[in-house]
Image (tube, rainbow, N blue to C red; front, side, top):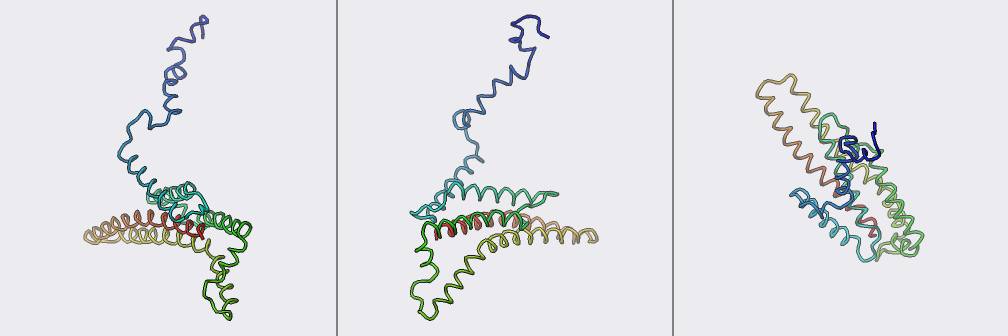
Length: 219
């Protein structure tokens, strides 16, 4: 309860609005201006720069697609893959609904852009250079099928690789209930090695998904 008009300036009357307001500047000003980057931030910045160089090289001079979009796709997939390594957390990227929702819109946008803006080039891409005239109808059919199944192969590859490692960890964990001490020790060591392998798979599959999407965009 205010006793006079100037009591609003008393720090004890409204602690949250007075003292915590000192920290609002930290939210507005970027961290690089007032804090020294930690080692993890330096490593992450180095990874982002390398990814930007890699995706920019794969996209080529046409720049069909943005490296920022592809880097964000890599971070999103890696975050979900890594989060699924913790106990009792569902790996969203192991489900076809999530992986297909990532692959299908990107593939469809590339296809629509190429057929609307670059129709002649898209038609010429269906027939590889040096194809005999007798094989041209078959090559067009093969190229159409290969283009149509690209989002399916992208999504299935990501989901299958994430499911396989989790199934192995689950099967090994179920064997430890009825095992003796030596077998239990071997199962734990195998699970630790599989966990390290799963962490590598989480990074590799994120990179593969983003790289293949970049190659499809550059074509």
